[in-house]
Image (cartoon, rainbow, N blue to C red; front, side):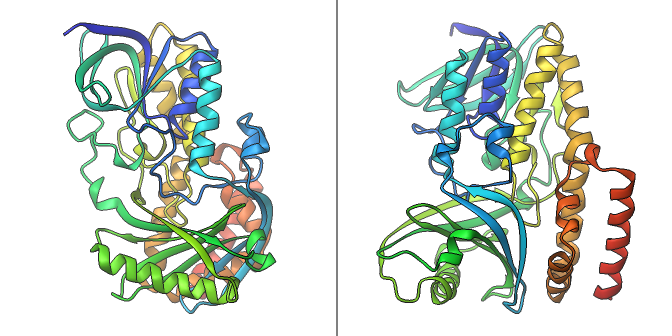
Length: 397
């Protein structure tokens, strides 16, 4: 088997892989991307909410934005709504988001290949060799790279590599989402709001539900920690969708419904983020906020940080991955670890969700500080957070 060679190999062309490829190629790094799907961004259960300023931060056209949403509606275990103003945030679809970044990567010279399924990797003295299946040609191939970036999302299977994580599968969440296409528009408030719902489902399991508006449909979905039988999961989503419909589009007929299912990771980030010249980013690294499932920003930032580290240490991939791991840990990994602990604390007594949401709604500065990256928080911000944490714990008790 002949072995192709490249400077950088990226596995996955999503919110982490595409920015890494784009910025590495822009810096002159020879870059190949392997994407398993035929259409980039397809088959992803994702409400695709973007935080304020995302498009400008990553040089994306606002043409991908469906709705500007200045309102975050949090529903506690009793169904009580707590509204926050922010942003505004934006909504899009993963097809448009991933596709737009991929087009920018192509324009910079990255070689993006679809229907290529990563199989295995081995570390040799002067390169990293990845084996993959060409699904279109039905052949097995190899690429030797100086550096490798894993960015294939929550379906990443890295247990056989030095980047494996024993607790990965226990952190997976089963998700199901409907794209609901209506004959008439929903209530105006629906197109201004991102909704997150936290409640105990029909089986007594913690459910996280959402409603995100798009220009031609509403994304209504939910996730349950661990595996759930398909029929029961659909029943849970049907019941949740009926509650959303009663509030937001009681008089509108449904023209069509598209169903999407996927696994999402919702626990702590991987312990090991690098090995020699290879690193892992985005959801594949566990860079997901366990309280709300947000991971697109951290994914894109991890891709950017990896490309920057590789550009700075182009002749030393091991030094590049060390720099990358340090950068992501200092920017957001600790915040994500804290969110996991917070979610576990809330789930032990579901009424705590209401306590937290009431405090967030009453203290507008609190969500802003919580979203800030660790290296951007001032001493005053940290003191403020400790005071708010003490207040929350006192009320929770």
